[in-house]
Image (cartoon, rainbow, N blue to C red; front, side, top):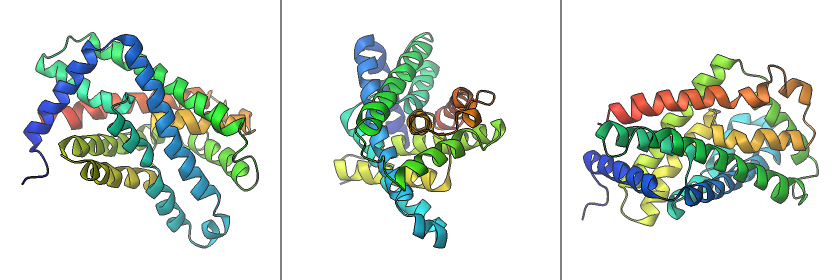
Length: 259
């Protein structure tokens, strides 16, 4: 028995998914996007706990800490895929495919992306503020310090073009993960298929726009140097090159090539 679908079959599934999203009610899309922001933030929090809670290992073997932090992050996407929620970066793959095919009207693409972007942001901010910051679960050293430095590392340290290029690497792997999970026919296979690409992107240090919707505001909540985060202002501009690269990458590499 074949446990995975062929690429052409997966492409059809992607288009059918976009058609279903197009037909769904806007409030349903928004609510699913909010839940996706929360689910991905669970993975982001777990990754920061593993990385931030290992200062000694970071000093002696920083590469191993990156591997361990990346290993746990995919729990977020696994929950999103298995529960059928709305994630911006995966929708940036399926909607262009459906538009190119003529299965949905062109205006459905920006409408979905706008709704899902704000839904993912609301979910990420809710999780960071209510379930992390106000709950106090990581308000003691070394976690609180790591949250601040991680936010600055993501938003203030890299140049604009570096964020853009890191975003391409990230969304390439995210789309591969979603594609592989869609092609798997059982739950365990779906989890394994998406886990490996996400593990790679986090361990390598690429940038994901929705993950940064959680980690950067969380750093500000924990007292990160706002003057560093607001130069440009980077804390807002960080998402712009990431969204730009998601559009470019998803359309060129994950839509045109398979189609």
